[in-house]
Image (cartoon, rainbow, N blue to C red; front, side, top):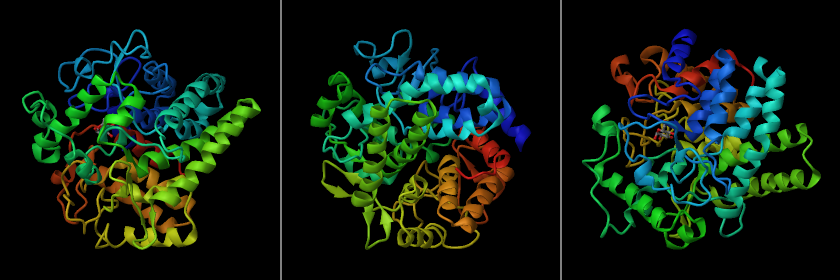
Length: 439
Ligand code: GLC
């Protein structure tokens, strides 16, 4: 499996960065680059720094790290750079085209994880940590300054593509609220549903809404304040905030390691405390014993159980009772039998559960990796072991697919979904096998 995973990363490497998948995602993606850099650090250490540097070449002057960096043109993806229309934005970087939204900020904890590997002990890595630290601070600061309108220590996402969990049913109601009077029909422009089975991908009706938001951001000149005022889609997402909380901890350790000045260390300490507390204050539903995202427009939680609801374990913000409640959900509504693959992206007893469609049921390797480490940090070692074993079992049987059908008895040929040779699945297969230490 190590050889096969390395071959996937080699195949998707393009002189400085890695494509998530050449046929479906022909550019560099934000959080993908983080997970991929970790995999590269194990087997192609010379490429890990380049991967991260390439992504941050796309960082905007306001600190925002875009979700796609279009290093080179490719015509097999929609929406490409012309649709995003970010060229006239004054604070976009020179010399490279990008999308205009971000993705979960994984880099600080990725840097921490790589620092414990042999690459992490080299002078190149020590210099790189000093180089990347200010960019990471700018990334987190952008989120706190421009995505926390109520000053709660929680940031909101502007688009379901910012969540990473793009097609999760938790975004359905907010997307439904979009006025489509002037929205264009994008069905003939899509490329994704011609490359992989349409049943594994979002519907045309959903894509129309996704693009209506992009058109709105364009009309707002990508100014966050204007978007916050006009957009129907403002969601405080559980996964996004948990990734931010976990990265804050790593950023704090990094700040101390690079001797950052006291004021900056204090600023990061405040981010750590406020976001951790706010996750429990706003997302935790004591009655259901689960964490749910919050729709700022509608002014309510979105009570649909998804795998993101477990990631407060990864953020290390749960008390003993919360840990027990989450463990119960993991082995009941998410896996009604011991032979189900953990962890379905939506609980199997939700009406929106669909075992084969993009983020509506299938298992994703990066969520499992974060869940595994969260369970270990919480002392839930048996469950952590099961999540790791299930992830490796699925990839061992089917290959490094984008996502996997969680149902028991699915034949290997039908287990893998979306695109095959998916880079972060390969990269995290490597970390699962080559670094047994907890994060
Ligand atoms: C899919 C995933 C997203 C990922 C992208 C590129 O859209 O939902 O999280 O970043 O593919 O792999």
